[in-house]
Amino acid sequence: MKLKKKVFGMLAAVLLMVTVVFIGTQGMGLVHAETLKVSINGTELQDGKYYEFGGSRGSGTMSECAPDSLPEVYIYYDAGVIEVYGNVRIYSNGGSSTEI
Image (cartoon, rainbow, N blue to C red; front, side):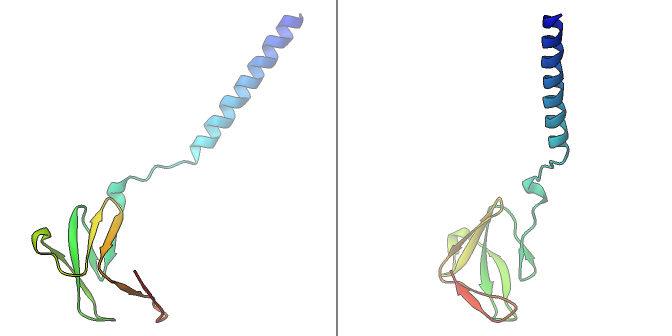
């Protein structure tokens, strides 16, 4: 009788743990890099590409550039990571700026 109670107790504990793990994983969702879209000044950035800035504050442009003739200031985008080369000043809608 004692063994039967012990087995049922262990079975109930395992069942409870499995239920908690199952319910906990129901809310998870994976995000794939393929669904990530980044755009700057209306240009959607593509993986493994170099981009240069053009225009001026408020009317800036962004265009792809060749890796063999890079300008002084450019960015490289790959898999959601933007690498900035040169001095770039980023302006917020409120007018404040940050240099990176």
